[in-house]
Amino acid sequence: MKRWLVLIFVAIVVILIVLLIPKKEGERPIFFPKEDKIKIRLFFPDEQAEYFVVEEREVEKKEKEEDIARLIIRELLKGPTNEDLYSAIPEGTKLREIYIYEDVLYVDFSPEISNNHPGGSTGEIMTIFSVVNSLCANLTQYSVQILIDGKPQETLAGHIVLYEPLAFKKDMVK
Amino acid sequence: MKNAKYLSFIFFIVVTSVFSSEKILLTNQENNSYIWSEYIEEQELIPAKEFASIISAKFEWNPIIQEGILKKYKALCFLWPNKEKIILDKEEIVLQSPCQLISGKLFVPFDLIFSFCERVDMRAEFSKEKNKLIFYKKSSGIPPLANTKQGFWHVLKEGETLYRISKNYGIDLSSIISLNRIIDPRFLVPGQMIYIPDIGIQTEKELEIPSLPPETTGPKKPLVEKYGIKKIVLDPGHGGKDSGAIGKSGTKEKDVNLDIAIKLHKELKKRLPNTEIILTRDDDYYVPLVERTALANFKKVDLFISIHANAAFSNSASGFEVFHLSAVASDKHAENIAEFENAVIKKFKEKEIIDYTQKILSDIAQDEFISQSIDLALFIQRQVTSKLDIKNRGIKSAFFWVLRDAKMPAVLIETGFLSNPDEEAKMKELAFKTNLVNALANAIIAYKESYEEKLTKE
Image (cartoon, rainbow over all chains, first blue to last red; front, side, top):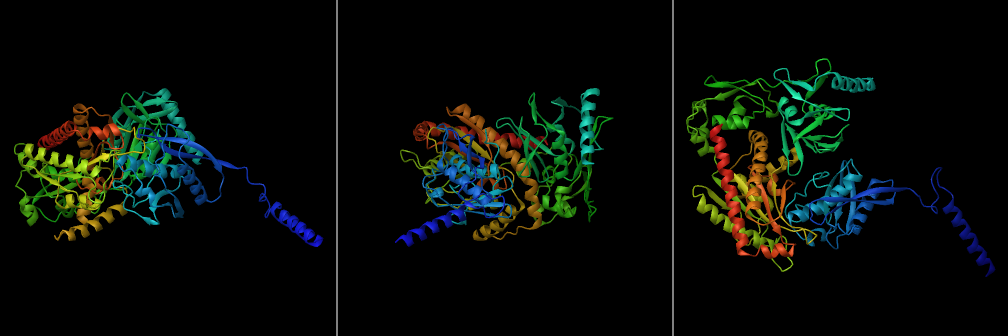
């Protein structure tokens, strides 16, 4: 019995040592997460759905751009903290995946983004560019193409061309 | 080295602005114009409109959305007052100083001028001694080679497009392109000779054109007959399996759109008996987005008007807005469209070949269609806001299916928000619908008249 306890104790010590010693020089050990944070800018429509208003948020710093994009969408799906602003992402929408190929960032959503959409040109523009602007403003070198259920789609709510990568839309930003 | 250049540039901007008069000479070696410049926060600014005209570019200022568009060939630049950032060919560029709106005119800094010229194969040089901004062309145009002696030469003026010339002389654009062996109409230069064929040597298709002496000022009526607005498509949005937006009390957008479109169809038929008014759907069925414009393109329609009702995530969003045709985003997109249209046209069981010349044609015409679409949008907006008690959300543009592929002036009208309970109720009232239909009919007729009047003046 005593021997078991000693063994377990030794095992715990070994695990701790592995976790606390940095793998490479300059890298922090796993047990001390990075303090580095980055500010991201999210775009939410105002009450009249005429303009986007920027909300800044701090998120943990990521090396890979796909991971940054994932964080941006995760924050966007949470909705705005400012009560005067609205989320332009339909209820139930989930992020499926993020891909980067050449200079295009593909963001793949679950079908709810289209199925639960309230419709209207304005509503559709707000959904699309809430996503596109939030990604483009933080990852400036990419244009953004929205995929639904893993595939490029003709449209999200019946007005806007969704087949092509889109760039930051400036004329609706306040 | 680069630093030295940069410093000397700043130096002479400072020197010139301190010691010289406030006028700068803009020259493209053929035309000179003196313009007033503004000196703000150590930066020289010149008016965008004058800059555009000296390099034969187009500059449009939209006072409603406070946005300027600078366009030449396919280079497209968006500018906003008090912002350092501009968008040049989809790229965001940060200028050293912001564009400024001074007494209603948009002024741009020098670095914008240099970057824009670079995009359109031109070079701009600033000479400090003479306070002169000189523009050079990097490549010259392709000399025309006419293979026939019947006809005459037209000297290309600044800002003139082949499309405009073909309209003025009443000659098919594709025959001008092929006779002059114009490989790429984007590389035309002012002063270039364009051969205008005589009616006699034209092909079968062109013989339909009434023989029109090009230089006389008298018989302008044929122009209206040939180029006036004779066919209008009304496109009620959504339909069938696609309900569009749905209001809190269950109003379906597809029904509202159809109702207004049918009423407008009836009104226009009554008031424009000689104009063909076509509906993309006349009942509750589904029409794919791309087929709507493909049909209008195939039928060679002169105006495309899509009718929709709006919705947003916030139920207090309200108002009326008009979206207009905007620039085709990419060559790839244009190719896809051509390919698709070929397929759709086959579906309509008609023979049609979209050849290279026709693709060029649509490129040039696109410019015209954009500015006409903005005109139409403004007409509609003026009428609707004066006749109805509804908030005006302005005219806008976005990458709409039905607006991007149309080969004609096109607008999309969002009549009101079904997601707003008050507006939903309003849109069910007969009085509102009647007023709306009247306002839209007035606007379309006023636009048609103004457009045809312009034709006779040219």
